[in-house]
Length: 87
Image (cartoon, rainbow, N blue to C red; front, top):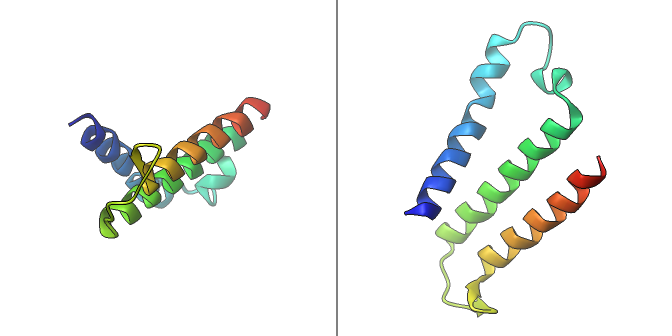
């Protein structure tokens, strides 16, 4: 249930980029954002895409006790934290 909550909340927040883009009149909203915030949005989009890929292509292969998609998400998340700490 916790994973569904995280994935659902993340998907909703990413989906809110479209109405924000339509409502913002001073050009592209991505240009008005702080670069660190735009980076975190990109990480969220990437993690959601990887999880959706894992749901669509369900395989029973595991790496270190977790699915391949979870391992990729873990790598993206840790890499994103390292990059974000340097911004």
